[in-house]
Image (cartoon, rainbow, N blue to C red; front, side, top):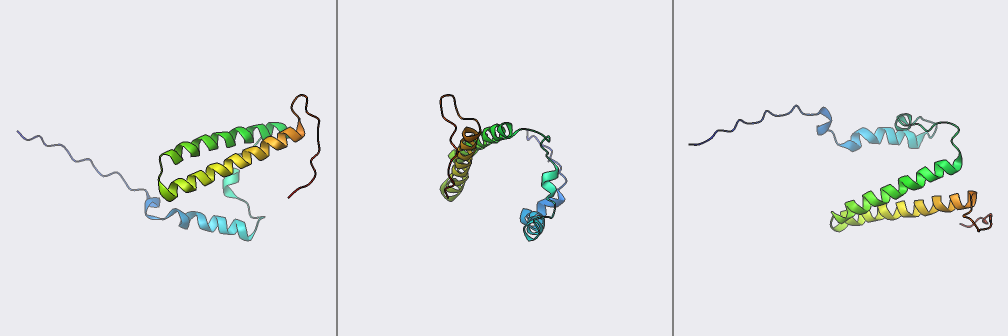
Length: 123
């Protein structure tokens, strides 16, 4: 005896599914690049409490970058060829940013036993 399985009703389609993401994001990004004073709608979603001290902000930035490093490294392990290279490039940028934040933290509050050294400007 053949068993009939009911067909699943098609889910309602999302109206954004038919629109490439770049058509949605490009106008907002372009407006921001043309006029840096133009408010960034994304920045209004998340906010940082006013008055947080710099070392705390840098510590959280460092932890966020470390998390990004782990996430992108895990992602890169599941990718191949050029997509893997892109993910590893993002991971490398996260590592460099984390190093910069750690150095800024060391400049603000040197580790025990290290003299507080004001670095000379090097570019």
